[in-house]
Length: 153
Image 1 (spheres, rainbow, N blue to C red):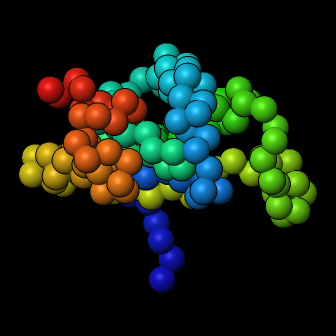
Image 2: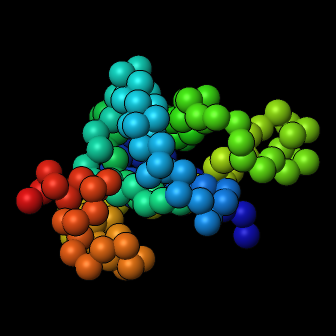
């Protein structure tokens, strides 16, 4: 069975993106570069960030797209590329990626889930904000500095 993405104009989506090196702390170490990349893409391809958490090696977020737009894939490709251009080229790059002119920063794919209703929306916000506790980085979710939880408090 082949996986197919579902696109809904004006949809709300939960995403998980991960680094290729799951032992890396690159996303928090280079948080300013990540923030700048997201900001730049939002300027040309608007979307609302409903909730977000950045972990050392992955991130989770909840987005709502404009009512006439469904193209989250382009936004993620641009964010990943913009972030990658902003940081030093010191990662291990596999031969298959070198042949394609790619960097070795991100996993190629990302996970996406279309939010179905208000309960699903709030369950995913809770999941996002609890993630640093789940991974043992903090005992209180509000202690994690790279989270939108502070906007909810």
